[in-house]
Image (cartoon, rainbow, N blue to C red):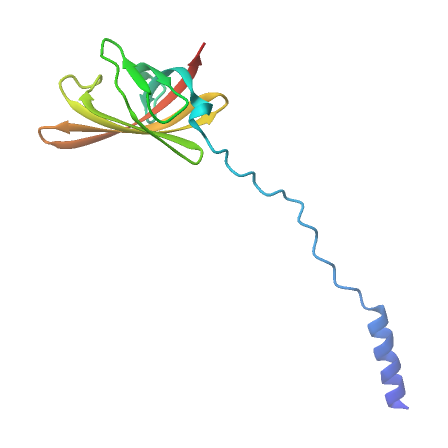
Length: 151
């Protein structure tokens, strides 16, 4: 008789037990893949302002003409002959290397620059590492840039 009562109680407990909640469906959307930037995306004329890494003060400006390929680009600093940067596209970024050339910020000092920029809100926004060759060794300065299309 005890067994029958225990079996009945066990059956009632199993029947009344709450079912385990099913895991909630994942409603978060996967982050969109970053846009692949191409030369065609940035082809055209740009006016670029260069600022210190932590400042909004403009240190220098230049005009740039970008072609629909990674060759034929020109950078025009004020009162300087046009320069041809080495350009490469990687994922959502355009990478430009220039130099050595005489620095605009440090008269008589040669500089080599490495810039990485991305499209943000129709502007070309990026960071530049400037390596200055001085008599006491290499000096490095971090800069920011912001380019706007010129009609």
